[in-house]
Image (tube, rainbow, N blue to C red; front, top):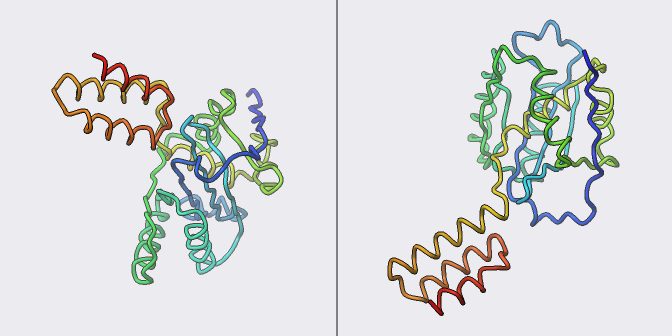
Length: 235
């Protein structure tokens, strides 16, 4: 089998938290039907963010062989630190019971966290899953890792698929797979113009059109909307 090497780009220093439009976290609790084969496996959490250009940024990662109580604490710590839109927990086999227990515990403690049980296809092995979700991102230059603070993850990435430890890179692939595809600036601009044109042709008052244009501008910072409004005014 041809070795698949992930060549990552360093985390962009200029990245600001406001540039991230969607965040996911994923936990592999290292349990379930393969438990006897995974005695050396660690529980792993990876947090990934996406910007409007659909680039993926690994924001945080953690892996450790530890007691259930510490896993709970780490889930809540990561949730408080990053506020992910979705916190996925692997739910294959007995791991689904763990996800249910976290949901119940968080509810009892009044912790605001959006947990989603993720069921991986049983026909898809770990290496194939990692290739499927990470390889396109890497080859397109849309995958970024903070190499200074993600040493363990970088070790797994650079040694894949030869490394016997793949807890973090697998969790990373799962976190990336949970992020909905972001629209490109071009498609968002086209969508905005189509909406504004519809408002104009349906006889909507100019102040309503301008309000709609401003809402698009605040979200996506289109540079061509003002020109488009001028065209509408003159039509």
